[in-house]
Amino acid sequence: MTPLLRTLAGMALGSVLSHLTALVAGAHPGSLAESPARKLRSRRSFTRNAALGAVGIVTAQIAGGFVYLLWPNKSGGFGGTFPVAAENVPEVGGAPYRFQEGKFYVVQTEDGVEALYWKCVHLGCTVPYIENRQEFICPCHGSVYDYNGSRISGPAARALDIMPITVNDDGSLSVDTNPNTVVERTVYTPEDAVPYPA
Image (cartoon, rainbow, N blue to C red; front, top):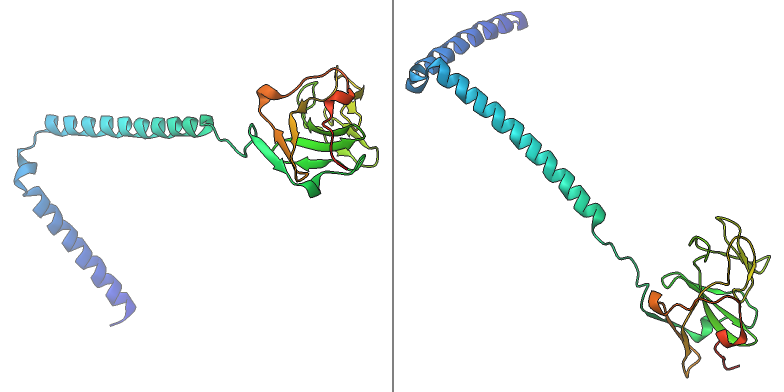
């Protein structure tokens, strides 16, 4: 059989089968008893339920998005006490040790060790240590702090805050990052540093 004949036969058979299906569906007892008014009501009900369902789904998705957005997502352990190993404590005047999770730098002056909170006291930007200048310089508004956290220049009105620090027997440190224990200071004083064994 050639492709043309197969196509014509398929079309004819499809037409016959579709007419038979329509006759069978029309002879269904429920469809004969259904009035036009009832059909209209069922269409309205379907449309109303579909619209309400779509609105309900969209509302649930928006509510879920807001819950996900506003749910507290605590990352890291800032607010607790962190250990700093003795090998990470810098030498006197050495490059500060940056502790990412605790948001502080450990510095050692001749007076002892300090844990400097890296948040700028001006507007709260993270203040990086600039190695070649040996200063902490805020990238937001240009406040400059000395190695020990003293304010040198810029819009900041005072020195960097410090966190309570404990020197352990093995030379390691324990730094308390609880925001309620952070010490605000105007200028650096030798009492800010905790003596560290040589």
